[in-house]
Image 1 (tube, rainbow, N blue to C red):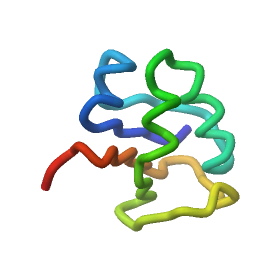
Image 2 (cartoon, one colour):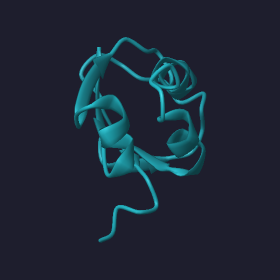
Image 3 (cartoon, rainbow, N blue to C red):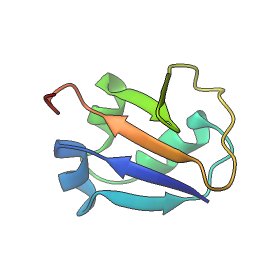
Length: 77
């Protein structure tokens, strides 16, 4: 399982900020998260960090315990 932290409006779409999801790659994670109504549109425009490092390759492998942050462009800073 990976921990997924959703920020801003993406968090609102799933009713909370942290989810635990079974996924072996970012592509699998994207498919799993897209099932939540209102999240798919944010996945297309958000940055993604795995263990605090920005990642853009959907083939990037995930392992048990990884922390994935979905960073929509409206998060501020």
